Length: 276
Image (cartoon, rainbow, N blue to C red; front, side):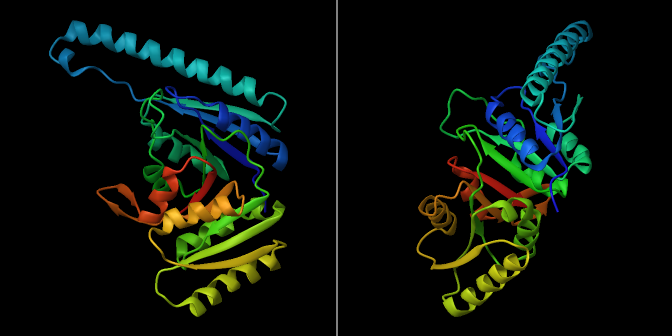
């Protein structure tokens, strides 16, 4: 199992350097093809709604601006991936980004998106919400914070919880896990039953070993917030990639992430691979 095709989303209003750099690194690592995607829905200001002439001019200007920004994104994508990927392809549309990415993800094994720090006041609001996207794609998401310069993935923290989503995430992360030096399978014991938590973790470690992955299990009692504990453990273990299941439920077609996943997404020190 490998990642034969990567897909990287380019924001039209944010920096894309980190995700493009890591997409190039992974393309070389896995000898993969890379598809670049960008999308933006056309928006007409409400105060022009009753003025047909004004609306027409604004729509034309808006459309021309979007097309120009999409073209600039394509140029950045092709420049960044030139000579690094087995093959590159560009796709774009005038659609809602999350909907378009979800549709196009059928062509990829792994979808790479970016994430801006909530403290970064110089960046506008993101175009897509990982919580919305993860419920649509059926593919693992690699979320790359703008602050991350490189993804070595030599030490990987698996945020384990005995759910379908965690099992899916570990399986989807196998290409990374097989190449890493060590995988740390960590469960935060919320039930005050360390023996049972350790049994679950060791099952995962043994499963990984049968796939050629060097793993070790860690169980910690819940002290405060599980997400914060996992983030602290990732720092302690010098892990630059966290693998986690995205826990949530659907409500009026919106995906609402569980608390642990939300907490992990708040940190920007390391990349996260999420699957649902």
